[in-house]
Image (tube, rainbow, N blue to C red; front, side, top):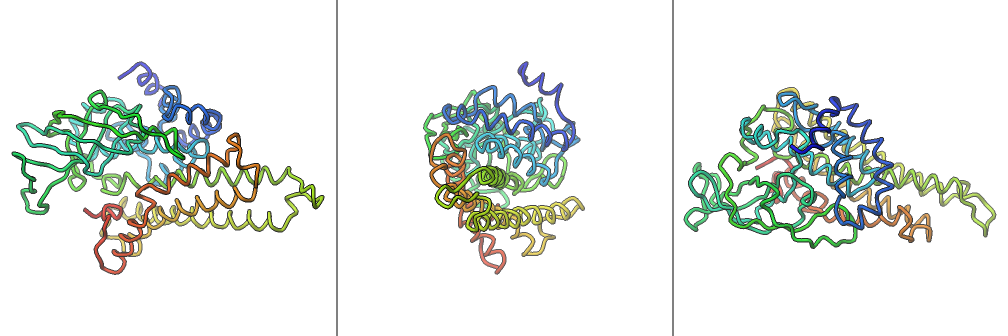
Length: 403
């Protein structure tokens, strides 16, 4: 544990309310640092330290580890609050906070050894893009992965890979999978970062490609999401690490709405000689965007609240009705796309005042456009939810918590 991490641990917030308050207090600072974050194409070290002090990276650790154990709904509020300041910072905070979720699928002694600090940051790509050869005591991992959000400042890197033995595809012993894939945890110093993140939006997320070459991963540092090895909880679920992603677009949309309302309140149409706040067009667009935001946000929170109620009562995802289970991933996609639509309409509403790089609308437009290309905002999620509703086969079943 570094000196910075030790200092953060000593000043760590212990409740959801404290973490949320710190996240909200940090938002204007993140807004001010937005240009620095974009220029660096990653989070500067001091910004990572500021995030660490909010407690966001520890919010998924439960009381069995001395953590605050925030519910999904409480986590989502924190992510929204950070995204209100800067989308890239919130995106990395959301990714990095999943360490407390992943530890549920590791043996407790292994987790304690790997994560002595609850502020430990994990990054990586979970899709099986690598190759893991079975060897005595573990695996030899090799591969190249894309979109490693937060990879430039993390402590551990978790990567998906297909398993081989003696050069041949390894089948699960129980016959459930003809070619097994698993997740593998590797210390960040054993990972080669490929500095190729130069994008339209989310420029500060440092979502670079990375390579791992013939690194030994002990058995204990490999996991699958259908084997809970820690304390069972509502967060020890296959879909838990995707639930709060929609907090980023929701936080950005709220920021854009507040900005637009502030601008409208001080602007005059010189051709008409009228205040913007008195123009029908302005009033209607603002109202429509607010309605869309309120409905979309309510849909996300309603779906997650119902899911949490069932899981917290000791139930499983299978206890949800098909409609309830599909509601969560459907609400995520809707939140991403509606937030982008809101930002687009407000960008047009404010006209040429939006196009300068000094305008926050410029960055919000680029950020929401980019984040909507993420898998959690794609039609594959809608297909999977729709398939579940009609009894078909989901392409991306893990979004439903199905393995």
